[in-house]
Image (cartoon, helix red, strand yellow):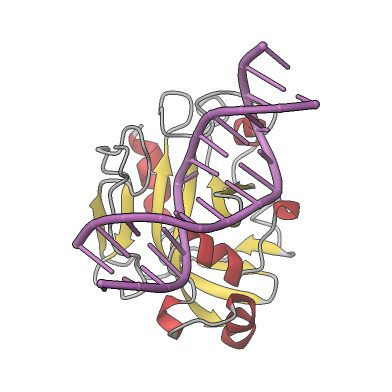
Length: 185
DNA sequence: TAGGCGATGACCT
DNA sequence: GGTCATCGCCTAC
């Protein structure tokens, strides 16, 4: 369990490249997989099968019909853990991201929230299963040289097991989305 | 093949 | 800060 959280934390401060836009990951949320009721991998289906595969691949899903969310499969394979990328700070391709978002209020909010982040990066369901350690359409940059200060708290938006403190963010970063507990929690 | 559902976002007060 | 619109996909008949 703890290694899942550790891997989620290690993603903070790391670069995430997506179709011409680069952002620095500022907020993530860990999902334990097989023993985590809130995880999409909790019920094993053809779709969630990707999380039972090799680590460092992309798992994307559509929510509420219109939003796309991006996850990093972290493994190990028998656990099917994944990390939801919730927010980031765009460092390259701001113009392109703004174009994709349409009417974005501020630069700092371009990739605030999982749906907005995926939209800024131009992610679609076609990116499902993309290898994240291989430079291409979507991939991860090298780990940060300097590890940022990290805060932890309960997960957002999940209807089950919301009390697990598996949400991590870079302390004080303004791109981190505001906390909101699920109405069903 | 039909229905339920969701790891949200935007907008309004 | 609270409320509500939203719809394509997955799962279970």
